[in-house]
Image (cartoon, rainbow, N blue to C red; front, side):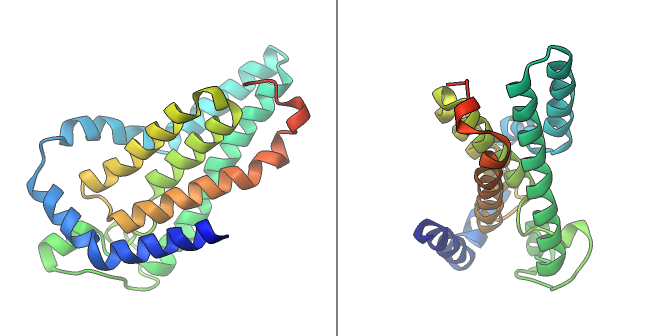
Length: 195
C-alpha cells in the first residue's frame, strides 16, 4: 500500500517538476531516437497479444498445460491493463507533448477524445510492464532482464516525446499491478514449474 502511494506521489512530482523539462530536452536532443523508435515497437499491444495467443494454441497442440495457462495469463494481463488505460485516457484527456510544443497546452481536458488528448496514462508502458512483470513472475530466473526491457520500452515513450514521464509512471504501474493481481488467478504456485 505504501509503495502504491509513493508511485502516485512520484507521478504527481513529475507532473510539476520533470514533465515539461524532459519533454523539451528530448524534443531538442534526438540522438537516441532511432534506437528508441525500434524499441518502442515492442510496446504495441497487438504484437504481444498475437504472440501469446499463437503460443497458447501451440501449447494446446503440445498438451503443455502450464504453458497454456501462462500464455492465457499474459494475454489477459495485457488486455486488462489496456482496457483500464483506455478508459482513463478518455476520462483525463491529457494533452500530449506535441500540443505543448505547438500550442503550449499542458495539462488535462477531461473527457476529450482524439490521439492528441490521450497522453495519460501511457498504453505502451502498461503493455510493457504487464508483459514484463508477468514474464518475471513466470520465469523468475530472468526477472531482471524482463523488468529492464519493460523499463526501456516505457522510457522510450518519454525519449520520443510521445508521453510525459508521469504518463509513463502511471501506465507502468497499471501494467505491473494488473499482472500481479492476475497471477494467482491463473497460476497456482504448486503448479509453477518454471524457475
